[in-house]
Image 1 (cartoon, rainbow, N blue to C red):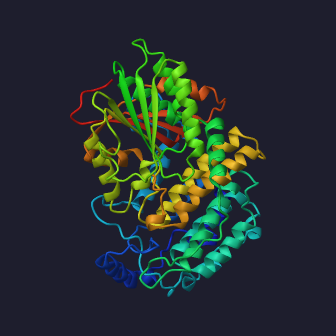
Image 2 (image 1 turned 90 degrees about the vertical axis):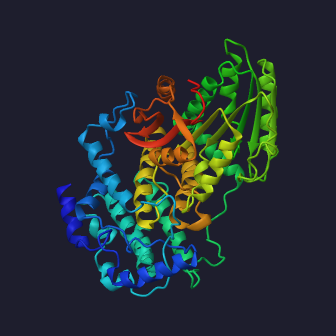
Image 3 (image 1 turned 120 degrees about the vertical axis):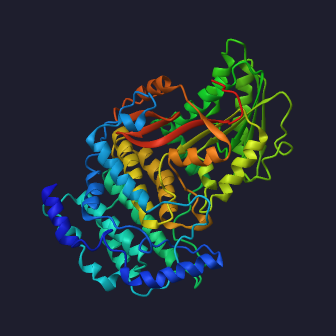
Length: 528
């Protein structure tokens, strides 16, 4: 890395690529930010240069070096003392850099976060001469790994976007396009997805009104049909443990909490498929005390319900063959607090109620967090025996674009690295998973703000804080051994498991990626 670092220092001159945040605009933009807050509007583009700390050159190097040294040797004994047990130096360095990223993304949970300011194009990054500090791909190819150069170009391009320098960002995107490709290695492929997200963000920047809000405009991105999205999701479920891990943990928690209960009612938030339920039905059918009756109510905003209804009809028949009397109901409405009432959900006396959310609750996390708080309060009023939650364990909801970009680049680089290890380079299945599933997530995180940004993933400690304030307490998952057995089926050594304060974490080479947890009301007796 010595030669690489020397090239880095010389090329970026400690001024660009997350070292300078358009300081000439600070005074102007602070005033604009205050105006935006007074007017209670949500402008489009967060500006890291307004109030965020700088990352030193060494910290940039730590970030880039982490793409080489991705193995953090996490101790996954599952004893709950997660951070104390992570003693390797690489893991400590990684967490140190993660803390630096979080400095860009600290949110006051009880106040409205205004994401950016009025988007006028004065005093751009180009005024600082930054366009002369980034060498071309050809210049960097002598003695410097091209993949790592891609990372530096992405960071510098993201900063140009944060500074609203469309000309410079466009120029850098053309350089990135010379090497980033959906057909290359994992770093080239993830770079291609992030470059596409940056390009979409630039398109939106060119359609911003004077008050900082986005004009009605369409991004020139091919629409992905629902069938294609579902195919990609099912391929992800079949070829990696990320989805199956969440289903297994949630089902195990429900089974344990339902011991001795004769009638179960599961409310599934944002249901789009039935992949989770066959294994739960088999587990319930084999209970020593006999199978319970089961109701599943699907809350979905999906417009095409024919396939989902057909799948659930088949599942009801399978349950009947196993001795379980099962009902299925579907409510085709977005999940709102007003929908989550006993009357609307047709709750019955004597039923044990379970709320299940797999990668859905993060869609209600907003800058003010009022939306999530209202959803959680409505769930609490229903009096569920358990709330099961599976989410991406990542900090993708910071108020500042650049910090969010850093975190998501590292997160999805680990995802793509795991796909590289699990599926052949030219696997059509892997290409579909990346193009139709993860690329869409990345583009939403990178390109959008306000209500259009739905992929607002957060870490376990943030979920603990929010659910704790809403009146829930974590119920320790006791299925670490089952999770290990499940991972052994995939025949890949890179996946890691850990337990953190009752939550179960699935990661890749020690980098946590998925979080599974179960929650009970504070005044309820333990179900375990």
